[in-house]
Length: 182
Image (cartoon, rainbow, N blue to C red; front, side, top):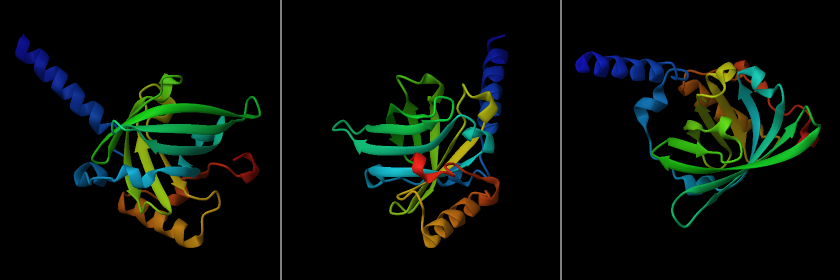
């Protein structure tokens, strides 16, 4: 009975992890160390997938700063299409290799394990994960840039990083078509 229970739990855990493979899963195999301190500063979410991620919340910006204990603070600002105003939330981020646990004390539906799928630190960063409390967004990825209107070379670099992960920028939506809402 105990062996069956352990096997069932193990198979369920493996199946749950398999459900969260984004693209070709290369990021799970590489597990490259990410220098998170180089991601400090302001970022603009320009592209997101799936496209329904933008139904209510658009034009995300994030500001990343490092704490003395090695964790990172994330301050998010986004435009709420329902209330027609910007809102702010925050998170604490702990990281190991290319994986991050985001803990959102004020918005627990955003708590999840996320991965950095690609970055050049200076122009773009690509995140992906499977927030458990967002069933409609089982797999979500987004591309952030240092500017709200990225240069063609920054966009091309991000597009190449997406392709390495088996993802296609054409499947993404412009997360903030009206740049004045940033």
